[in-house]
Length: 151
Image (cartoon, rainbow, N blue to C red; front, side, top):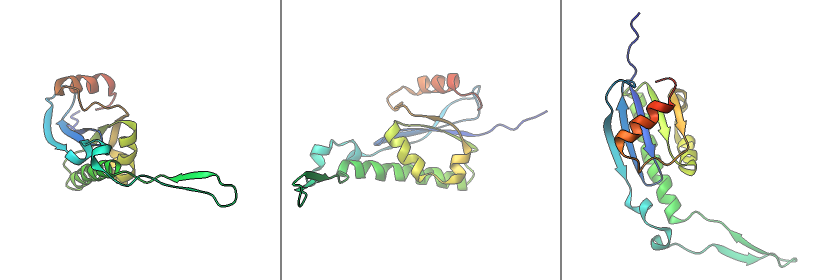
């Protein structure tokens, strides 16, 4: 019986750079589709500036407190991840892929999960909470080939 090949996209990302690969299976070739990089998200937080956290004392007890506000660096990372998820969402709407594998560090992976549509989450066949962005392309292919059960 003939089973059609499924087009799989592999998104390997962190908060500042991402690569998107495509493959039709473990025996097929591995192709780079797109690559993103955001200079603002790569810049250290101390260089982006921003106001220090608001601090004060509680009335009555005199206890100290601080209000945690997202830094410019965090905002840049969230904006970058939003751009990547928009590309994935539009790719699914255009039927550019059948299944998706996502690899990102835990913090970025949480932001991806918040912004991915429910249709994309149902097409996920693998999620890796690891930063693989600095791994060479061919090693990435071997990494996924060893760890994915269904592809």
